[in-house]
Every structure is written in structure tokens, then in C-alpha cells.
Image (cartoon, rainbow over all chains, first blue to last red; front, side, top):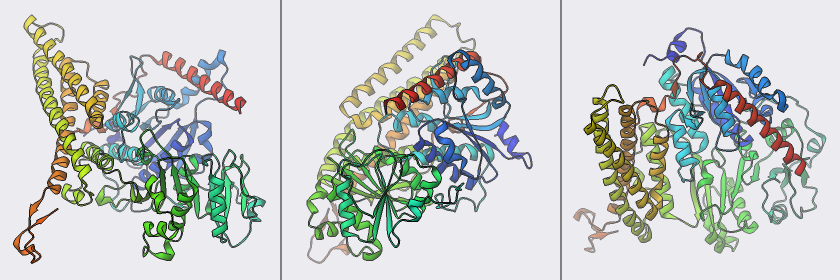
Length: 580
Length: 48
């Protein structure tokens, strides 16, 4: 493909200039750094710049391979604000970026980031922007996916970091060619991710009790009964100390020389210095989690009840890397469950998996606590399994159907955008089958079949519409018959969308497909009717592919649950030929 | 894979030097967005 970026990339010695617009939260900035590190490893000659809000300047400027940290103009006065912004924009416009990616999420600054993305020139743009009709739109498929699913309340198994990494890597692969063959085999996270500006650690930290292992505790996200957990850990583990970081107060903080309270306004160097000496970070959702992930500090992450009991939305922003532990609670965070969970994983080196986590809860006499909690451990999948972080449940309440559909949705996205899927047979062996799961999948299957038929019909209509519209070259002059036929096709498509909506009201787990379709339709680019019909057809084709995958998964799962006759050579001699 | 490359490659801007048609409007809105964000940040700090 002969694109301008390709031409630029082929110019000897001319590195690709990349601008990431990340005006979101500190967590988003840190996750962006993680994604960029992977990109930088695969395309080492790329020059990366970031546009962030003032809160993001400190961490980003400590990353050596980031060429420049830019911020929007600050301290504006109402009467001169427009002039200031225009003055700021002047030199930025002259930069000539090759690729601009807007990675800002859906928060309050999303609009700001979209406007900046529209105003700053670049040869290739990814992410959200403001269209000429002032409505926000997306430039690429991964951004539409983020809107439809990740930000649209749909549970799916691709972490935010992996999502933006894949988006940018795909674009680079298209525009700049394959990465260096041996690049990218290094770990992304590292204790030395950030350079420290000041090497002098503060006194309170250098004078801490020696010979202890340290747990950093995030005060910002500490649950109400955190002090009970701390007290329990200190009492039973004399080799541990704790350092409380972040803003906020921990209620009834135990009085112990083994607890250090970091001042709320310490700088990045201090936090990085403390984290480099800690063994764990104990935290709920908080930028500290993203920072710990970057510097390879093991996280004991707590997530409370979400919109749905044991919902899985946290997996999109949870701790990134290998070996992090997640405790998901159905009710209020419980220190006893938290202690049993943490103590199992902190002594992993000792029991070396000879003890199960259920056995550990048994020893502590608190097995009943697993009835209201889920425990997960994070792992980076090998590249032949698709890469990225995943969370494997190790104990607690099993929600089979939710886990099943969550996994299928992730596979749908991989099929759509990566053109890669693990073999279904191999995936199916990992399933835990139960009568409840089978019953639920059977009921889902009916809705899948109905939607598949509707989408199939819509696809035929969209094709008809395209054929009709492409007959007319002028665009606005046509015979009365053609006009009526085009109107009829349009109406039919709308009716089909409404029909799908009705089915998804009965089966909300399939609403994700409608959300995805609507996002695609919102982002139709063409100015002609035939072009729009073609894009609608493409959107429907993606839905059909998604439905086919769902059908394959439901069929395979139900097939696994079906009793089958054993081969005579497999009989166990007692004449029993049936299994499952 | 059904998704075509065009959907994944991002938007190729044929003439990046060409300003958006509504540049002035976008600059105005950006200024307003920055001001609002700054005011919100001040209000949040005062609330603490």
C-alpha cells in the first residue's frame, strides 16, 4: 500500500514521528506508557512524544525514550484564552507528525482530546476526533470497539493496555512494515522503567527498621476495614513492615513502629524509591496500581461489588503483568478473606504449589469465605496464545456462563481485528461444564439463531441498496422507481436493527453486537449512498462473523456436554460405554 | 478476517497541511474546554 507514511518510513535515517494524545487520568497515562514501551521495543527507531495534562508530566518526563512531553496551555484567562490556544497551536502545527493516536478514554477530557486530535496535523490519525458536524467520531476500528464495548459497559477480556498496544502496532505494521524479527522479546515492565531525578531517599525511608519486607498500602483506595488486615498481617508476619502511600486516611491505623506513613504530597522520586524496596502493593483501583505494574511491584488488588455481582469490568484496567493477585468480593471487603488470600500467595515460594489455595483456607478454618469471593492470578499469555494479560481464577465463586461469554466476546474481537484465533477445540478443553451452564447456553442459542437470520437478511438488503445506489452516478437524480426501491431498502434496514434490539432486550448478553453495529454506523465515512451502503454491508459482515463464532462456541460447548458412546478400546472392562 | 485494512489503519490524511474547515470553531471550543477543566480543578481543590 503506497501511503505517505510508508514513503516517510522508507526515507533512510528518517524515524517515524509519533504523537500520543493522552489527556485522561494519571492511570490512563501510566497504562499508555506501558503500551508505548511494547511499541518502542518492536519499532525502536520510532520517536515518541506525548501530549498530557499537567498531572502526567512528572512520570512521563522520567521515561528516557519519550522524546518530549507536551501539555496544553495552562493558566488561561477567559478574555485571552482563544488567543493563547491559537498561539500554542502554531508551533505544534509545524511538527509534521507521521502518526497521531488519541488514547484518551471517555472521561471529562475526552472532548478536549478529540478537538486537539482534529487540530494537530498528522499523516495518519487513530482514535477519536471531532467531525465537521461537531459530533465525535472514531478514525479506526479499535477505537470504535473501545466505544462500543470497553467503554460501553460490555465485559470483554482485552485489557485497555493491550487494546491500545494492538491498535498502534497494527497501524505501524500497515504503514511502516514488519517490526525487527528479534525485537519485542523483552519484558515490558521493569524496576528501572523510570529514571529517578534525585537519588537521595528521604530520611524516614532510609531510617526505616532494617531486615523487613515491605508492603505499600494505598490509602486512597483503602477499604473501610483495611486496618484490621494490616493488624493481622503485622501480628502473624514479624518479617513484614508497611508503608502507607497516597492521599486519604486509613481509619484506626494500628500504632506500630513497623508502619510508616508517607506524607500525602511526596514527589515521584520518593514513591519510586519506596516502591523499589517493597515486595507488595495492596490497593484497590488507583494510579498506584498502574505505577506498580510498570515497575514490576507485585500487586494485591481488591475489587468490590461492580454493576453486576462478580462483574469482570475490572479486568480491563486491573494490574498488568505476571503474578498479581486479585480479590473480588461480592459484599464489603473482608479482612479475613484478604489475609487468607494474601498469605497464600506471599508464601508461594515456600509451599511451591504443594498446597492448594482451598487447602490454605481450610487450614485457616475459613473455607466458607470463598463462597462470597473470587480470587484471580494474572499472567501474560505467550504470543502463540495471543499475548496480553489475562486473569485466571484460582478459587472462589464460579460464574460459568459469565466467564464463558466474556471469553467468547474477546475471541470475537480477535477474529475481527487480529485475524487470529486459538483453535476452538483447544479452548473448549478449558471449559468447566455444568448443567446450569448448558441450560443457559441452550437458551442463548435460540437468540443467536434469530439474530443470525435477521443479520443475514439485513446483509442481503444492504447489498441490494449498494447495487441500486451505484447505478446512479449523479447521486441525487434518479427514477421514481429507483427512489422508492432505495427508500424501501433503507426502511428494511432500520426495521431489522429494531428487530435485533427487541431480541437483545430478551437476551441482553447479545446487546454487544448491536452496540458494535451502531458504533460502525455512527462512523460511516462515505459521502455517497452507495459508499454508505457498502460500509453498512461491511458492518453487517462483521456481525455475521461474530454470530458465526458464537454459533461455533455454543455448538461446541453443547457437543461436549452430549453423552457419547466410547470406543470399545476405551471401555474400562465393566461394560460401561457412556461418559459425560 | 472480515475487517478490512482500511478500518484498522486509521485515517490517512491526504494533505495534513490543510486545516480543518472549522478550525476557528475548534480553537474556541478547545479554549473553553481548557478553561472549564481548570475551573473544575480549582473548585475541587477548594472543596478539599
